[in-house]
Image (cartoon, rainbow, N blue to C red; front, side):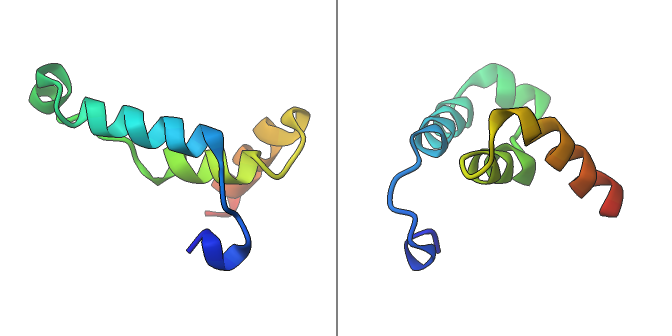
Length: 66
């Protein structure tokens, strides 16, 4: 999907994906049933395209609409 949008490389997304894979194998996270939700990844993708100062505003705006 990202390739179709012209996005080839997002460093933060790759780090989040690696972290997610390692957490999925960790006994603590498994026992507590702690898994990242869609906000973990969508925040990284949208945050990559906007200034850092707008991150909180955009996150809150999306939450109030939803």
